[in-house]
Length: 133
Image (cartoon, rainbow, N blue to C red; front, side, top):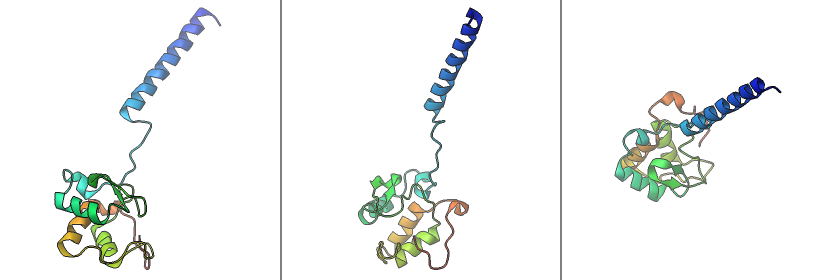
């Protein structure tokens, strides 16, 4: 390899290293695939809803805005649900009995559903008859 070829090879390697560093710093190597949560977009969520979620749901569900990391039920940072679907799960239970029915009622159920639900129902998973998550 002559000196001109070596110089080009070193230049290409240096450019590749710079691009890699920029991509890592900018997060280009790890796309964000989490579902948007109503609570996250509302400046951290309603503190009462966060506390209720932590006490009632956090042992089983991960939800970053509530600071929980449960691993029994769905990770609510990764799966989008509409408000109505969250309310249905709270009222009826889910996961073939893994989540009991009626854990929350009234204003508490509404507040937690708002905290969890996506602002864009098009992102939420469709509900089929007989399915519960």
